[in-house]
Amino acid sequence: MNDGNFSIPIIHNSISIMTPFLLAAIGGLMTELAGMLNIALEGLILIGAFFSVIFAAATGSLFLGILFGILMTVLVAWVFGAITLYLKANVFITGLATNLLAGGLTAVLSFHFFGTKGVLMFNDLPSLPSLNVPALHGIPVIGDILFGHSILVYLSWLIVAIAWIAIYKTPFGFRLRGTGSNPRAMIALGIKPQQYQMAGTLISGFTCGIAGAVLTLNLGAYVPNISSGRGWIALVVIYLGGKTPLGILAAAFVFGLAESLSNYAQGFIDIPADFILAFPYIITVAAMVIMSIFQSRKED
Image 1 (cartoon, rainbow, N blue to C red):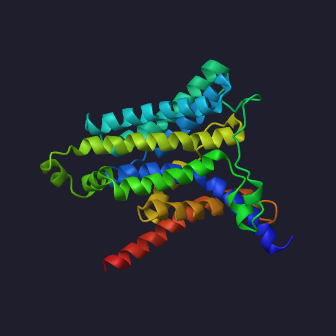
Image 2: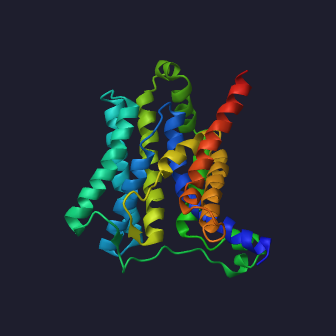
Image 3: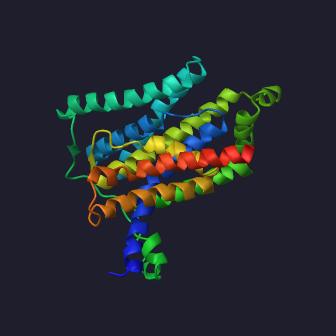
């Protein structure tokens, strides 16, 4: 197998792997632009992952599974936002509590309804449809990389485009960014910053619900802690991407590529598997260090 043929499946898998990072980061960007750091992304992904696969299995419909998964995630996001914004709880404490709640709630519900806190397998679960266009798939290199993914991958790209338009081309986006940069000016204009912060939080629930659905519906099962730090990495993606949708798209691909390389490396490199599996997290730490150095030099 030559290097070109070897690299194509790695990049193809990177695009699929990056999707949860991308979706969670786009949602987190909305709260970040509104001046509210959302560290509940990890828990929101877990909620979306659990309920989407449960409802998909119960109804036999992927659409209903994803829809109910999103609704449950948005509900949890609303609770997180309400406690933070209206009850004035500390956003970091509330975010951590949301993450802990997600892990505990999914374990309790799994044991109550299915009698196990371990892996939930669903043999009759419908599979996510893939976009296969023979004419386009035959394009050298590009066709093999960009096509053949699940429909949720392409939905994530559409969400990035919509986010860019909403942030930079609509009054909502101007007010959202104004809320984060100068909330007093927004108040002076008769705009309530809390409304836009809550809107950003609910959007993060929406995107994290889809991110969770990507994880479990691709696998056809629910694995405890299936989010595996993706919500935390999504926060890094936001800052590494310069707090812009297109920057986040590029940064998410970097982390998707790192995880894809670690998956392939397990069969080719004779080093401890734990180190290989930790590679994406090493990249995360390295990215944060490099970004901090770059920002410090820029300020100087």
